[in-house]
Amino acid sequence: GDSVTQMEGPVTLSEEAFLTINCTYTATGYPSLFWYVQYPGEGLQLLLKATKADDKGSNKGFEATYRKETTSFHLEKGSVQVSDSAVYFCALSDRNQGGKLIFGQGTELSVKP
Amino acid sequence: KAGVTQTPRYLIKTRGQQVTLSCSPISGHRSVSWYQQTPGQGLQFLFEYFSETQRNKGNFPGRFSGRQFSNSRSEMNVSTLELGDSALYLCASTEDSAYNEQFFGPGTRLTVL
Image: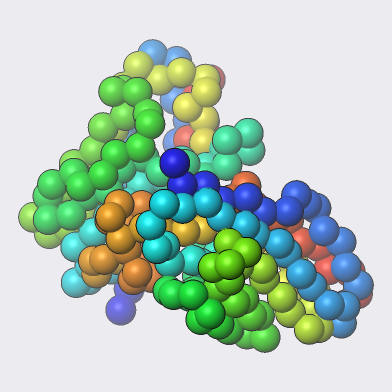
Protein backbone atom coordinates (compact mmCIF):
# COMPACT_ATOMS: atom_id res chain seq x y z
CA GLY A 1 0.00 0.00 0.00
CA ASP A 2 0.86 3.65 -0.17
CA SER A 3 3.25 4.96 2.47
CA VAL A 4 5.29 8.00 3.50
CA THR A 5 8.66 7.99 5.22
CA GLN A 6 10.24 11.09 6.68
CA MET A 7 13.42 11.69 8.59
CA GLU A 8 13.30 11.12 12.27
CA GLY A 9 13.62 13.93 14.72
CA PRO A 10 14.01 15.79 16.78
CA VAL A 11 15.89 18.30 14.68
CA THR A 12 17.49 21.15 16.59
CA LEU A 13 18.74 24.21 14.72
CA SER A 14 19.92 27.68 15.56
CA GLU A 15 17.93 30.65 14.34
CA GLU A 16 18.70 31.58 10.70
CA ALA A 17 20.04 28.07 9.92
CA PHE A 18 19.04 26.18 6.77
CA LEU A 19 16.39 23.51 7.20
CA THR A 20 15.85 20.30 5.26
CA ILE A 21 13.39 17.62 6.29
CA ASN A 22 13.48 14.60 4.01
CA CYS A 23 10.33 12.88 2.83
CA THR A 24 9.96 9.95 0.44
CA TYR A 25 6.82 8.17 -0.60
CA THR A 26 5.54 4.96 -2.13
CA ALA A 27 2.37 5.11 -4.18
CA THR A 28 0.79 3.02 -6.90
CA GLY A 29 -1.06 5.93 -8.49
CA TYR A 30 -0.36 9.63 -8.94
CA PRO A 31 -0.71 11.15 -5.51
CA SER A 32 -0.83 14.72 -4.34
CA LEU A 33 1.78 15.57 -1.73
CA PHE A 34 1.46 17.81 1.29
CA TRP A 35 3.38 19.22 4.21
CA TYR A 36 1.38 19.91 7.35
CA VAL A 37 2.60 21.61 10.52
CA GLN A 38 1.35 21.06 14.05
CA TYR A 39 2.05 23.57 16.80
CA PRO A 40 1.79 22.43 20.42
CA GLY A 41 -1.78 21.84 21.50
CA GLU A 42 -3.22 22.50 18.07
CA GLY A 43 -4.49 20.62 15.06
CA LEU A 44 -2.71 20.38 11.73
CA GLN A 45 -2.30 23.29 9.35
CA LEU A 46 -1.49 22.87 5.69
CA LEU A 47 1.92 24.38 4.98
CA LEU A 48 2.19 23.65 1.26
CA LYS A 49 1.13 21.18 -1.40
CA ALA A 50 1.99 19.90 -4.87
CA THR A 51 -0.40 17.99 -7.08
CA LYS A 52 1.83 16.73 -9.91
CA ALA A 53 5.42 15.93 -10.74
CA ASP A 54 7.85 18.88 -10.79
CA ASP A 55 5.35 21.15 -9.02
CA LYS A 56 6.90 23.30 -6.32
CA GLY A 57 4.82 24.19 -3.31
CA SER A 58 5.83 27.21 -1.25
CA ASN A 59 4.53 29.15 1.72
CA LYS A 60 6.01 31.31 4.49
CA GLY A 61 9.54 30.74 3.17
CA PHE A 62 9.14 26.95 3.07
CA GLU A 63 9.48 25.10 -0.22
CA ALA A 64 9.15 21.53 -1.48
CA THR A 65 9.37 20.09 -4.99
CA TYR A 66 7.47 16.99 -6.13
CA ARG A 67 10.17 14.70 -7.54
CA LYS A 68 8.58 11.70 -9.23
CA GLU A 69 11.91 10.20 -10.30
CA THR A 70 13.16 10.00 -6.72
CA THR A 71 9.67 9.74 -5.13
CA SER A 72 10.58 12.57 -2.80
CA PHE A 73 9.08 15.79 -1.44
CA HIS A 74 11.75 17.28 0.81
CA LEU A 75 10.87 20.37 2.86
CA GLU A 76 13.36 23.26 2.88
CA LYS A 77 13.64 26.71 4.38
CA GLY A 78 16.58 29.02 3.96
CA SER A 79 16.48 30.70 7.37
CA VAL A 80 14.45 29.26 10.23
CA GLN A 81 12.99 31.27 13.09
CA VAL A 82 12.16 30.33 16.66
CA SER A 83 8.49 30.54 15.67
CA ASP A 84 9.02 27.66 13.20
CA SER A 85 9.43 25.24 16.12
CA ALA A 86 6.71 22.63 15.59
CA VAL A 87 6.13 19.12 14.30
CA TYR A 88 6.11 18.75 10.51
CA PHE A 89 4.22 15.99 8.71
CA CYS A 90 4.64 14.88 5.12
CA ALA A 91 1.48 13.34 3.65
CA LEU A 92 0.02 12.03 0.42
CA SER A 93 -3.44 11.52 -0.93
CA ASP A 94 -4.58 9.46 -3.86
CA ARG A 95 -7.60 10.53 -5.89
CA ASN A 96 -8.79 6.92 -5.91
CA GLN A 97 -8.99 6.93 -2.14
CA GLY A 98 -11.05 10.06 -1.70
CA GLY A 99 -10.00 12.31 1.13
CA LYS A 100 -7.74 9.82 2.87
CA LEU A 101 -4.38 11.28 3.85
CA ILE A 102 -1.43 9.00 4.57
CA PHE A 103 1.06 10.65 6.90
CA GLY A 104 4.70 10.19 7.68
CA GLN A 105 5.66 9.81 11.30
CA GLY A 106 6.37 13.49 11.81
CA THR A 107 9.58 15.41 12.46
CA GLU A 108 9.88 17.64 15.48
CA LEU A 109 11.81 20.83 14.82
CA SER A 110 13.23 22.94 17.62
CA VAL A 111 14.82 26.28 16.74
CA LYS A 112 17.00 27.93 19.37
CA PRO A 113 17.67 31.68 19.49
CA LYS B 1 -15.68 31.39 7.50
CA ALA B 2 -15.48 29.65 10.82
CA GLY B 3 -12.98 26.81 11.01
CA VAL B 4 -13.54 23.17 11.84
CA THR B 5 -14.79 22.79 15.38
CA GLN B 6 -14.61 19.71 17.55
CA THR B 7 -16.33 19.01 20.82
CA PRO B 8 -15.47 18.26 23.46
CA ARG B 9 -11.82 19.29 23.51
CA TYR B 10 -10.93 16.99 26.37
CA LEU B 11 -12.53 13.82 27.60
CA ILE B 12 -11.70 11.31 30.32
CA LYS B 13 -13.37 7.90 30.29
CA THR B 14 -12.80 4.53 31.89
CA ARG B 15 -12.26 1.20 30.21
CA GLY B 16 -15.41 -0.39 28.88
CA GLN B 17 -17.30 2.86 28.46
CA GLN B 18 -18.27 4.34 25.15
CA VAL B 19 -17.69 7.83 23.83
CA THR B 20 -19.06 10.08 21.10
CA LEU B 21 -17.02 12.87 19.55
CA SER B 22 -18.45 15.61 17.39
CA CYS B 23 -17.09 17.54 14.43
CA SER B 24 -18.59 20.54 12.62
CA PRO B 25 -16.93 21.13 9.25
CA ILE B 26 -16.37 24.41 7.50
CA SER B 27 -19.54 25.67 5.90
CA GLY B 28 -19.92 24.21 2.43
CA HIS B 29 -17.57 21.32 3.01
CA ARG B 30 -19.23 17.98 2.39
CA SER B 31 -16.34 15.65 3.19
CA VAL B 32 -15.33 14.91 6.77
CA SER B 33 -12.46 12.64 7.72
CA TRP B 34 -11.34 11.39 11.11
CA TYR B 35 -7.81 10.59 12.24
CA GLN B 36 -6.30 9.13 15.38
CA GLN B 37 -2.98 10.54 16.58
CA THR B 38 -0.86 8.67 19.11
CA PRO B 39 2.85 8.93 19.97
CA GLY B 40 3.44 5.32 18.96
CA GLN B 41 1.40 4.99 15.77
CA GLY B 42 1.38 8.58 14.58
CA LEU B 43 -1.52 9.83 12.49
CA GLN B 44 -3.83 7.11 11.26
CA PHE B 45 -6.89 7.45 9.07
CA LEU B 46 -10.12 6.22 10.63
CA PHE B 47 -12.82 6.96 8.04
CA GLU B 48 -14.22 9.54 5.67
CA TYR B 49 -17.81 10.59 5.16
CA PHE B 50 -19.22 12.40 2.18
CA SER B 51 -22.87 13.34 1.81
CA GLU B 52 -23.85 11.12 4.75
CA THR B 53 -22.12 8.05 3.27
CA GLN B 54 -18.94 6.42 4.45
CA ARG B 55 -16.63 6.68 1.47
CA ASN B 56 -13.45 5.22 2.88
CA LYS B 57 -12.41 3.33 5.98
CA GLY B 58 -9.08 2.70 7.67
CA ASN B 59 -7.89 -0.39 9.50
CA PHE B 60 -9.59 0.01 12.82
CA PRO B 61 -11.81 -2.49 14.66
CA GLY B 62 -15.56 -2.29 14.48
CA ARG B 63 -15.66 -0.56 17.87
CA PHE B 64 -14.89 2.60 15.94
CA SER B 65 -17.83 3.92 13.99
CA GLY B 66 -19.05 7.19 12.62
CA ARG B 67 -21.85 8.93 10.86
CA GLN B 68 -22.58 12.15 9.06
CA PHE B 69 -25.71 14.21 9.18
CA SER B 70 -27.47 16.11 6.41
CA ASN B 71 -25.78 19.36 7.51
CA SER B 72 -22.38 17.63 7.11
CA ARG B 73 -21.69 17.54 10.83
CA SER B 74 -20.11 14.26 11.82
CA GLU B 75 -19.81 12.15 14.91
CA MET B 76 -17.55 9.27 15.72
CA ASN B 77 -18.24 6.70 18.37
CA VAL B 78 -15.92 4.35 20.16
CA SER B 79 -17.52 1.56 22.12
CA THR B 80 -15.99 -0.63 24.82
CA LEU B 81 -13.05 1.70 25.33
CA GLU B 82 -9.58 0.28 25.81
CA LEU B 83 -6.52 1.93 27.32
CA GLY B 84 -4.95 2.01 23.86
CA ASP B 85 -7.75 4.23 22.57
CA SER B 86 -6.21 7.15 24.45
CA ALA B 87 -5.28 9.56 21.69
CA LEU B 88 -5.90 12.88 20.02
CA TYR B 89 -8.78 12.48 17.56
CA LEU B 90 -8.64 14.92 14.70
CA CYS B 91 -11.37 15.79 12.29
CA ALA B 92 -10.73 17.34 8.89
CA SER B 93 -13.06 18.73 6.28
CA THR B 94 -12.75 19.53 2.60
CA GLU B 95 -15.07 20.48 -0.25
CA ASP B 96 -14.42 17.23 -2.11
CA SER B 97 -11.63 15.57 -4.06
CA ALA B 98 -8.35 14.16 -2.90
CA TYR B 99 -6.50 17.22 -4.14
CA ASN B 100 -8.32 19.82 -2.10
CA GLU B 101 -6.78 21.07 1.08
CA GLN B 102 -8.08 19.37 4.19
CA PHE B 103 -8.75 21.73 7.09
CA PHE B 104 -8.19 20.24 10.50
CA GLY B 105 -9.91 20.97 13.76
CA PRO B 106 -8.04 21.33 17.07
CA GLY B 107 -8.84 17.75 18.05
CA THR B 108 -10.41 15.98 20.98
CA ARG B 109 -7.97 14.62 23.55
CA LEU B 110 -9.40 11.33 24.85
CA THR B 111 -7.88 9.73 27.92
CA VAL B 112 -9.00 6.24 28.89
CA LEU B 113 -8.27 5.21 32.48
